[in-house]
Length: 156
Image (tube, rainbow, N blue to C red; front, side, top):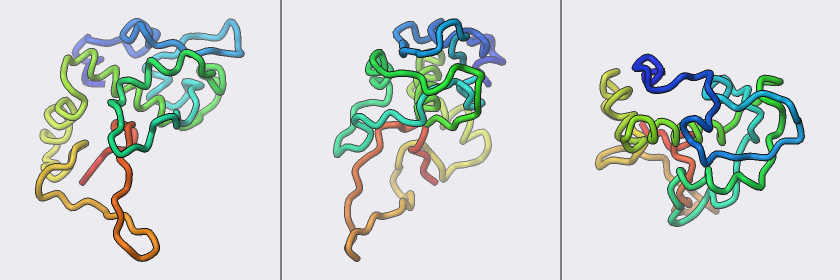
């Protein structure tokens, strides 16, 4: 919303205005475009997740997901039903990067978290941060990293 207040985005314009490579199939002809607004309110019709490559020892950047959606389908028409979408949040992170010209983590740290005094929180793990550990069969294990940083990478 800061980017909208600055006049850098119009949340009611199609997502493709800002991310022209975005493309996803639909079974609902004649419905409206997916916009930042309906993504923020979870009314975009996008699937809840895009699992291909989400967990990995060395995940690719979340910004690569957009190029893999061309053969996927929306779950619903835009503005039809509320349905939480981590995929939508991940694409919004891509939008933040593109429009701000900054990496997602840097933008969120500098424009949101630090101004709120959240010095112990970030979308990247920094030295001294306490992070939950994974356990399997009673033994500590290293969990795979999650690619979709904007949707699931908040550390505090």
